Image 1: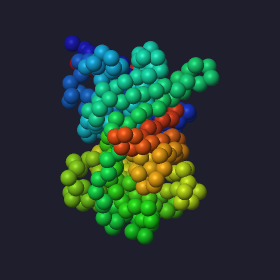
Image 2: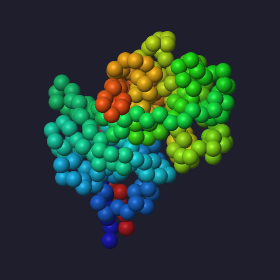
Image 3: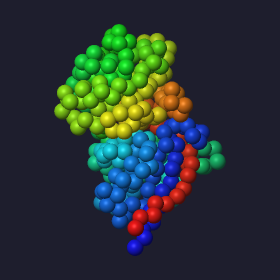
Length: 301
């Protein structure tokens, strides 16, 4: 028996088609097996693909499962922004607020509209407060990015893992080094073998300050070759965690950052990330634009 599953693709963290980070959203995934979801995500060949299912709690909008090319993910940024915009366009959700059940917890998505009332983008709140993990060796991290140890800026912090739902290793580099960086797969494999995390979870977030040490304007690049993403054009979960991590290094109660990513890939993206101190730790959010690109369906026998 032939089964048909509709999907929509969007470009996230941009207001221009063919910029930002592409995402495929299967708007009704009931009937798909885990294996079929993983196969469809690999076939779409985007950083992530989402599958929308009925929520366990009817007070929520949907259960959303997120897959990259090789495995299921507990949380990710641009999949939530994009899925929120797609479902809002279909009339789902409580006004302009949607709540997604995910492995990492409940994710709230707030839709943003343009002057004519059209859907322009969304902001999401990360499902978990900031958690800070281990420091990673400078030499090994530099090798992963194809850089020399001297290209890393260590005044504020060493290479360090942090998360608001999905872990990344954060590394400040010089502006020139950010442009020159290129992932070294063999170095990634060597470093992954020394970590407790699953190998495909090793993701490297490089950032540089645009206007000096105190700047809130940043440039970023994210490499995750062990999960099939050589470079990601826009990474919401990473930049939300970066905002929270940077806030943790100072005494301020809140912080906001404008983060440009994807420039070197020819898919320029702009992410608006923020963090604030809360009773349970440092909470983060991230948002940006979203543009619909394609509609189609997967036909499975």
